[in-house]
Image (cartoon, rainbow, N blue to C red):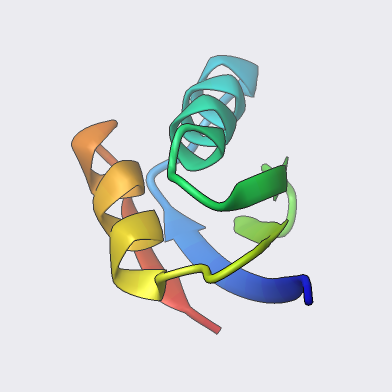
Amino acid sequence: MAQTIELSITGMTCDHCVNAVTGALKSVPGVQDAVVSLAEKAARVTGENLDPAKLIEAVKEEGYEATTR
């Protein structure tokens, strides 16, 4: 069964940032889709067996900060 995790993301300033975070989130095993919003400074990730810690780590590896909402 698919689940959804929402993250607050800080440090994004442009579309390049959004694309980097989106790509990082989509590379995490189990992620089916990731929608990142610059205006909301947030991401909504859907998938199977999602691990919030792995999602946060993927965002941090791109140079941004993330926390679960």
